[in-house]
Length: 283
Ligand code: GUN
Image (cartoon, rainbow, N blue to C red; front, side):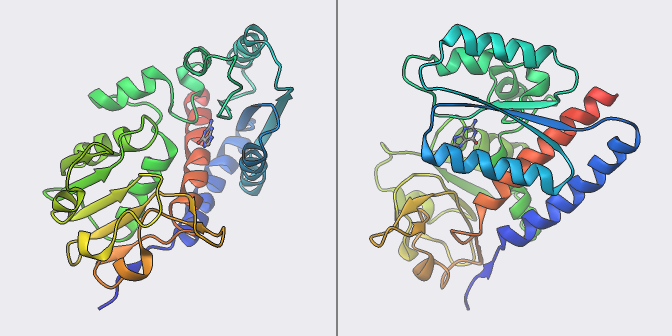
């Protein structure tokens, strides 16, 4: 039996349709939900991401404000711009596209963003809120992964979830969200010996490693839900995940493809966070 494919592209369209309804309701009350993005420099990948964010906003009726600066922008000038956006009541969500040039302290920049407008969910206060179960913005990628599990009919309660990867924006928040959903959670990482011994125990397996074909069929429990957060290139330069899709789909119960899985959902959840910020601002 081959796995159910969790179609991130289709699910993201569903999420956008829900967001569009919420945007329309706010606009009917005279409030135009707005996302502001700051882009420093001309990293080609960042420029592509930001362009997508703009077209996503447009597709749900949200206003998108892009602030572009040259790579030599002074840190103080960036912090001042963030302060201005914090104080601007017409802006509800904001983010600074990463990576930033080396002369700018990324942590300092993220800390300057108002937690009320932290659409990426990267602020320490957002991370802390997630940690202790208070309302706050969730990082878009793990938030999207949770939505994908739900769509696949996978309830984490009582399941063993294994997260491979411990980054602040995927692995750690993913583990916390799964814990909040009553899973038993194991976090593995680059220093974990015999990774397969852990992943074979997973009812839910989240791969956020950053290395192609890290998860092979022999490492997956039959019937498991497999979420592939990887964004790598294969030998031919084509986008591929961390999971050996062709092999693992023959073992897993459900699986997300790359492309067309987690990526589109991450983009959609940014819109969810932004409309939520606007709703909170509207009271
Ligand atoms: N760079 C790559 N992904 C992201 C993201 O989700 N948010 C920001 N701010 N920068 C990124």
